[in-house]
Length: 316
Image (spheres, rainbow, N blue to C red):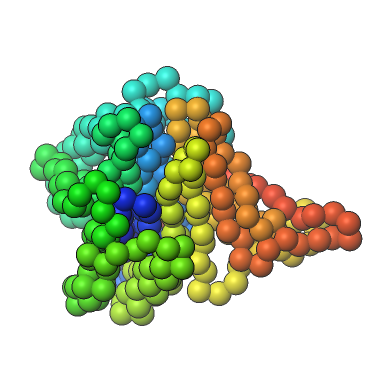
């Protein structure tokens, strides 16, 4: 179970999801936590689009975490494991990415006779003409034994600043309706308004988490925009501050970043610590990761780092 909220207009794309994978114990049906910092987001920068894709539903497809599976099929590199990967040599137009996902989901879920499926919410901007992009909000749905569907939501005129909104996951219907009423059709133009909308979506994740098990209070938000080059701003919103201890013994604040896939390379989910805003990214893409407490100094040395985020095996 999870929850994903997305809002887009001609100027900004915001997607927020919780960061928890839970498991259902077959003996008693009890829901327990499995991976408190599970990544559910894959950012794709293609020649014609930039999108953030987050999933709800099955946390594992086969033995792979669903985000790893999505990154493999989106990139066309089925051996992808994370870390840093060399440039891709396959079609990366956004429609080709979605086509690969639907083919892979249909094949994967053909092996499942019943139970949960997978939904992927795709939010971004797609170039339709030279120097002009339109907001896109697509929902890919796949259920066991059924062909996947792709629903393209109407995001209005290509230059509209009016927000379009969609949600997937297990949040209560009343919460989703209320949030839709507060976001859908609202003009968002200034940086302050964008910040306020992002906080509103994060708070909605927390409210969904309080309503029942299976949705985590920790959230990941992704903003996408362009200015000379594609820019990705990722922010981890922990319910409580999270620290890690470096090899030197220094305790520093930490934050997570999602998959980032571009024709020039792939960066897997990572832990960033101690260094304010920054992050490794493929050539031609600017990745900014917000680490809440800012720079940490050990004497005259700036303590900052970037590590690949290891994931636990599927629950048994």
